Length: 443
Ligand code: TRP
Image (cartoon, rainbow, N blue to C red; front, top):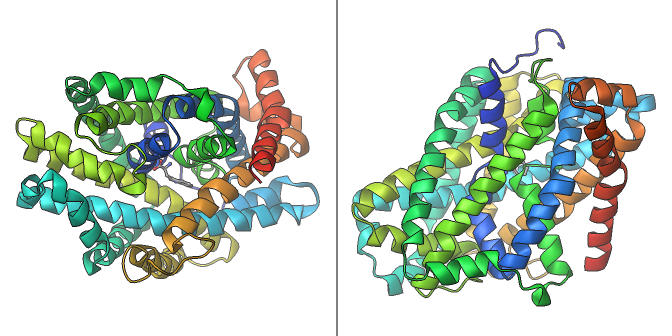
């Protein structure tokens, strides 16, 4: 299996797929609302710090494990740990459970982009008055179309994942990521011309540390993991498709850099608009979907802009959902020895059930709460703020302390020695220590 495992054809393919996994709703939908609810500037600073000292080392750790083992997360622990890694395998199981939870609620939000795309094409997005937008959003998310779009997303996702690694994943990402980038820059420039631009930028970039508490720090850490697709084995499974000559450290830094840049640009698009149109920065998950139509409404040719935007956002979400699916699809096919088709079917079937529950969380199931959270909220919280950081902690401990140093050095070469030592230090002490402290402080 190891020899004829498929791998990405080009270096652009490597970057486009890892960035394709990282960039998605996490940057454009989740980052602005998390920053908004957690006070803006200070959240951003902590977020960037988390990316630099925890995110990049953990991506490298996942890359090393993936390429050295050429397996899914479960198999990677089993292959690389001494004595078959009986306990480490449990981490693999957590990764698979977490990835399906994320796929379920992520598909709901990706479904919202289909709705906005349709409305944009039909011209109705333009027509809804600002004041009625919130009611329109609530009535849509409470209705059956929201469930339908979730199922459509899972169907599309299933079709692309069936196409396999090279044909399906790489081809879509190569084209899409550059296009999305250009569009976002244009929208950011447009937002900078809005009357509320100054206030918006101040909110996003001027830190006010007096509002920081442990929930802000945990939120920033969770967002860093979510946005970089870390802690569940996504980057690991993608690295298992890298060729031996792909430089891991450079690819990790490029992925993290571009991902953070996209989140920042999304912030620059959203916050000037939030302050211009009088929205509440702390509106939560619906923030972006309420503010964006106002932005497009004011732009000349708004319908065209919004159509292109929601189309690209939809496609960017799909390059992320396929990366979530790949975790469990690779697991089912490699560990259970079933065909890829069957593995995709198992993954899709579970996601359909859980995705429907998440989609209903805004309507019929809105009163069904566990620990004060709807199914949707619970899945997001548990996966992003608990399973992913814990996964990241265990992955860094594993690569820092358990994995043979020669494997680490070999996979990361040609990175300079000093950088390798720095990275190893982060993985041994800083990343696990910081994650543990943040958790304990929060609890
Ligand atoms: N990083 C993606 C985003 O920002 C989401 C994502 C893709 C993800 N794959 C993942 C999150 C795996 C957790 C695990 O939209």
